[in-house]
Length: 192
Image (tube, rainbow, N blue to C red; front, side, top):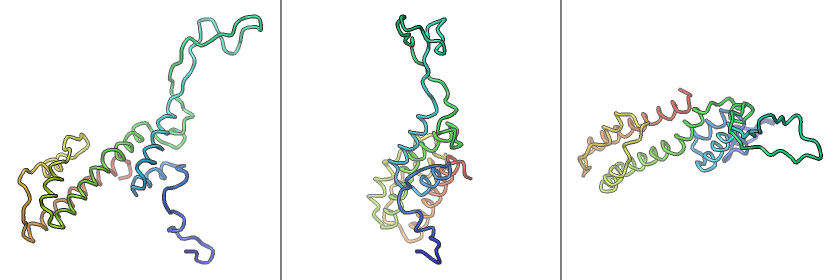
């Protein structure tokens, strides 16, 4: 909506951004959980700029002093990876650990959160067989998962026709789990 020549925030940001120019742009697309595939591709592209290949020349050869026209060209013996201080990852202000943390959020934590949201919906809709199946399929071995969440989700007692108070308690516990997962996301994005 345009008001007196100004564009509202809703009009500026529709869909996935065309460019991710800053660290905040990456944080925003992850926090808003826009398009995980595109986000993963952008993060991988950033990681790919951290290193560059450099030739290893034969001993005594200097690339600044090439052989004469009669001599055969000198080929590098091999290539080695070296840090690339001019890589986009560093120019945007990231560290390798920050980007790897963001990749972990996109590939592991957000899908796990989605499973918890599905579990919450099943409990809310009193689809207890579905809720039990969903709870049973959760991977509780992830190293990023807080111990309190592991304990809460490993309760082996199956859910069955819950009274209103029990259902409310279960939903409250699930909301607490979602809150802890959100805290992990914020820590990985380093924006607490």
